[in-house]
Image 1 (cartoon, rainbow, N blue to C red):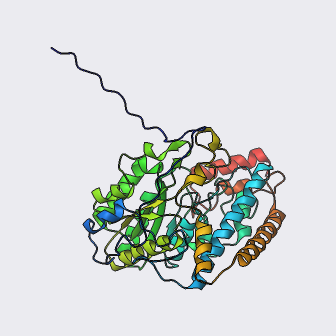
Image 2: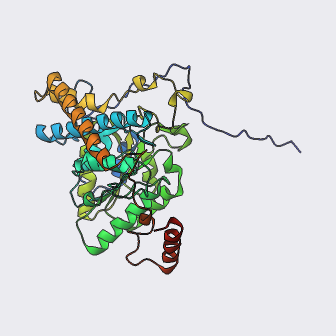
Length: 413
């Protein structure tokens, strides 16, 4: 009997490593390539080409075209630009503060600012936001004050979650922005539950959530999209493919040619969208919101983008990818692309952009100076130890009350 040949374990590797020259193929996808089906009646099969293609509105000369052009006003575009610039400058300033010991930990949205901001702007104010840690820009759209956000990152007495969460793991009740979760992926299943509750109550509410390409390997992702397929809740499910999950490349997370294509197997209309194209993101999300509102169910979206910075303040990306890889990314920079569009339509200028950046930088620094009046990382004051036991249960259970009393005895309170 012939000896059976042993197979070789297949482990994908990143296409480029430190010392290599990064190269991405030029995108073949143009704004006019894909049609915009009726969101209220669209079948999954009608989105096959959308899942394997790429929805774009902006070309690289700043022109908007194609059926997916949302044709939103210049005022709305400038509002979106301001939010994105605020997010980038806010990130830059707080990362510097972390490096000088003023914050314990930080994560930036560098290169992905358009994702949360464009998509949140396409929603209604009553819709629920289930973010991961790179969607803090949604809070700017919903009107959260920078002082409040910085107080949370500092963990001082004005931290709205009383030190219960890591920095940048925000929650904002007034903006229906649900707490960021450190165990990645859980928000997908949670968003389905809230969407089903809204559906049961007959409310015109939609949930939107984001997961990273690496987190899409978790069971939460598959549980969620299976529930979305079966129960058709009003939810928008985004997989943000930013090429890297900490230090592992995106090709370790899926064997499909696109992340969007996974949704087709679960009978969900699925789209792949240029994540650095503000207009395309806005348009696809508006489509999905309209579908959800009509009762037709969920939409599955792959947001194709690039994580331009480190995973977090604890990460050194030069250890696993070429330093110049960001420059080779064919999607460009989301802020520069929107600026280019506004200039192309005669609504903006380089001078206005400089003025905007200068103004916002001053606002961020003023917000930090205001926030530290309530305490800083080194000196406090910090939230009371009592906050370990409060604001979780309406009535504190007996076993927690015993622990609370014990803490007071040992602390001398």
